[in-house]
Length: 175
Image (tube, rainbow, N blue to C red; front, side, top):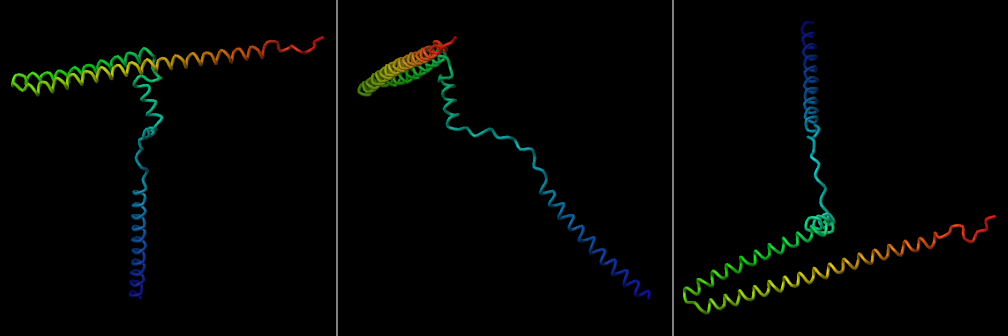
């Protein structure tokens, strides 16, 4: 009988150990799942991806486009011309320095070729400035003409509205 009690106790202990082990494994697996399914860290909101329209708007407003006053656009244009002029003068100075070295070494053909290059670059620069000024004047004329056209359309809309609203009681007999 002692033997049977010990066998039953051993069997119960074995079964209980199996249950406990299974529960621990299940708990560990569940814990692992819980750990892998933890709430992710707060995600930073990414700024919206810029579109072509955003890029165009930025270009227009940042470099003297419609979003700025004509005075600001004129100032930016003058600054751009000044930068281009400075770059042009620097390039010509470098060529003049090279020409001077060529003359000192007696390389007259090289000096003449450099002078021809200087003259060509200077003429091209002046021609480009003239084209830019002409195009700018033409744009200014088109803008002025559009403004006049818009004002004329708005004035004609106002006149049409006045003609319609002259006398709301006209044509009605009121006794």
